[in-house]
Length: 212
Image (cartoon, rainbow, N blue to C red; front, side):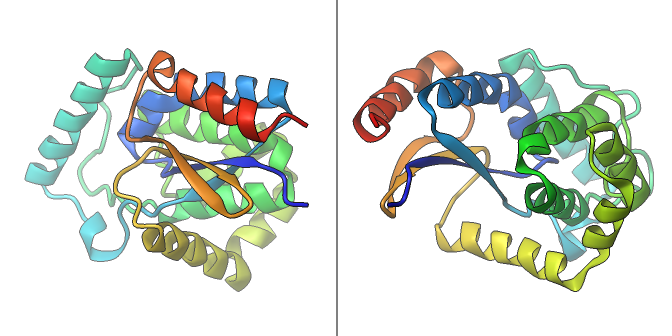
């Protein structure tokens, strides 16, 4: 029998996903209390040619970040963010989450939290494998196992498979939280919402589908 689950669809370098982080912590707590698994899929916000930043793109992104900070209260380091020459390629950070998911799912969300904090608060370049490996080590992952899996062709293929799955679902915008039971999907939120706004819908779904 297929157990009900929540599916969090996001990109670690999506500022609204960082804004959603405190809400996610509440969702994780509620799901754990109800015995509902929360799985994660990565979306691939910016990859390839679209990842290269010029000054106008940088200004545009920072404008978004300021809107997120204002709406959610989440902290950002605007001064050191997105330095000259930065390539906003989210694939490596997404791939790191795929590795984390495969190696030890219990450490996945704490690792995600570290990734987002490092990027938005610490102005660290999480497009760099060396930075990702260090953060994985801090989150409790085995260094050699993480490095091996990060560079593996299978992991790159799985990351692309996540991107394709998200695209096929026609998810428009991150973060998105889906509830899934017996291959039936319910949309809890598409885009940022405070916990108080999505909690009634989430609680209703849990009460109907997770009453085991």
